[in-house]
Image (cartoon, rainbow, N blue to C red; front, side, top):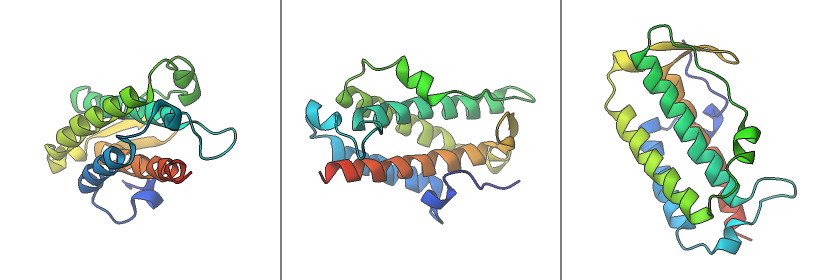
Length: 160
């Protein structure tokens, strides 16, 4: 089964656990000193603000980490798709600094979880309505690439 995800290009040939560790440090260095106003900037008209990107990232860490844990504990696990825009619409109250703190905590938790898995654990399969048959390793690669993808957007905002 392939580990090619929609974010494989972002991850490149990097090892995903190391990439997650690196991304967490980069998020912290980039964003820890931002003001509330800076978190409300966007990288392009009509796109999410930095705060919304951080909320989305934290939500994704929750969802994908849960998928992996469910796959490892539920035979024949079938993941559910989620609508990121609907999730975002329900979670607009979270401040930028709080979203960053939540993201960093979830990244640490997921990185530690995935780092402790055996090759057999990583090969555990699950199904997804959009992506078909997946493995826990696919989820790990998806998470790592997704973090890098959105980090580039936040770095762009930071240059403004």
